[in-house]
Length: 233
Image 1 (cartoon, rainbow, N blue to C red):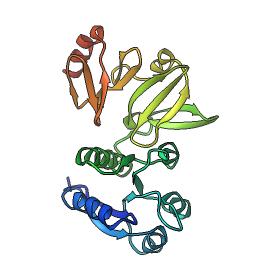
Image 2 (image 1 turned 60 degrees about the vertical axis):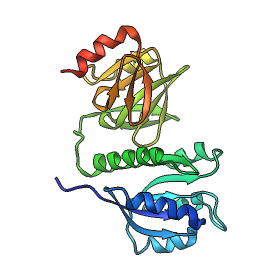
Image 3 (image 1 turned 120 degrees about the vertical axis):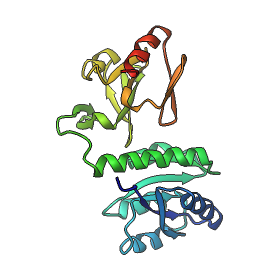
Image 4 (image 1 turned 135 degrees about the horizontal axis):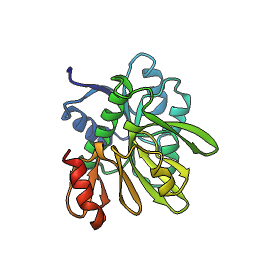
């Protein structure tokens, strides 16, 4: 299979920050630097001629912010926000951001975010999901289709559950028990009172937790044996 390459743009008004991200892009085998811009206006014009799959985007920039840029783009690539401020995190995920990285950027967080972007790109382009491999959920009074292959794990949030996907998180009014009943038991398992996981997504596990895409999820003692048996099949 041909190696997947994502064409990337870096948008930041700080030349030092751009340089740091550009170096990480050039060191990654699945990324290719297509363009770099120091403001949103330059980016908007540049993207008319340069196709990119992924943008590393600063938020606070002169004249137009990163959010302003996204509002103006007709065709939106995948977005990884890179910013020094935490206060924009909630708004960023309303823009379906892949991830929200704090400056100064660390290699581990960069690699984790890129891994998410690669997986989502494959999901969208390689047609690995069957037509019937999804469920509908109700979130913010709207019904949303959620592909099971895109669903990493589910977390309890009081009277709600949070669906953690390769795209934006989705909040649904439901109990864990009721939501678990919607999922195929051969692919999803409740491993803790507050967590249901997609067993296909497990990367590492030990007696205390499992790891999915860099997220560590606690494993209840009485679920350990059942999980080990399921993963060894």
